[in-house]
View 1 (cartoon, helix red, strand yellow):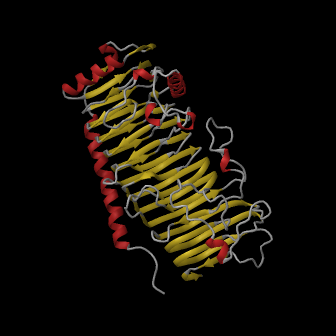
View 2 (tube, one colour):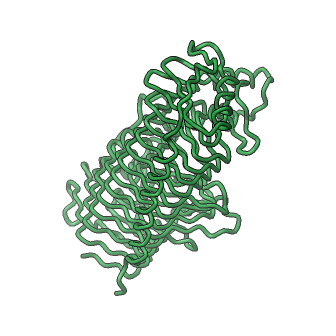
View 3 (cartoon, helix red, strand yellow):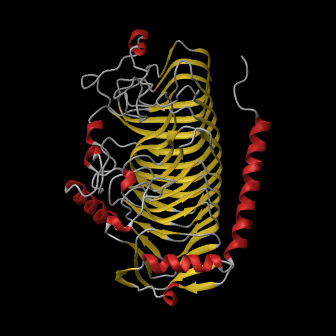
Length: 509
């Protein structure tokens, strides 16, 4: 049999590039933060929680940028503002006890003509910028979003009100930086945006360290969105979000999100934990993700979705703890908005994972729960699902233990494993990608379809109660290795735990 696996030299070169990137970004950012301090109060800003300081803060930023750069320091107090723009060589520094409060009047925010989104803090085509310190940015998004809803109902503001909420672009984020170079975000607390929380779009050399995010005051409250950026370090941060937590996107078919390091992060979500896409027009390349914890999360701990013509390649995920999460691993190629481009996913390694999937809804009691219409159902397996013409390639799963509740009941909902029954599972190529999109799948542990070169090494799958389904189903898989794969399921003696359909070159050790 031809040996499965990766080009080790290529992989080593990729990891070395990421290490060099890490060092380069840190050096660049250390250089640009040592500058003169200016206190925003000296420009006349009021920290009374009432005065709207938009023009004052903007004037201070402009002055500092025009006079060689420096830090605009916010002392303790509450500074209300609408939309402001950070300029080159300016860092907003929030001392302990300082809070930048978003105005609750939607008309205090602008929709930037380039990015076509609202935000409290913008930066467009700037360099050597940052937001630092032990203070807080609080968007007061629940109030602002509902005030916007009131204006829409009165006809003052036009919005389609899809899903009975204002469009994401018509609610202010806390931060939106676009096409900026050398960006440093450290130590701050981010709370309660009205839309997404913080977006870094086509930025280069982005460094995020030690931030605390509480982003669950309204719909679409992501933790962090990194879009088509090149050179990113994200580490030592905590996220509690109503929507996706660590969310990497690719909005531009001619761009790519690449050369990214994520380390030591904790997240909770009523959507996904670590997510690539959607949108995924250009793609994602050269990621090293290590030591993340996902808990109380409605959807998947790990979701990689290439459904809009983009690529996902050279991704290494190491050391994941997923507790009380609706699903663990979801790798998906679809054909939603590809417009003739060929989506692809290859060279993915996921290792050292411990996960527990609950029988019930994992985000019950949070402000904005995942949709009830996805339940009830038998518990879905982890899945690796391509398309017949766009196959997922070279995925290695190593040192993984997943504890499922089991208890799949054929009288409740049934999905069989005969060739005809497996062929009846729809491709759903244009469907928005979620692990639950098929409702019922024929395995309780892993479902793999339209994939080449899949390796399971030291994988343990546990079902706490007997399940009518086998643990693993592989369908139209070319090349699969199962090395030291263990199944624990009550009353399963003699049960065939790996079902193959239309698959070749399969080795079970």
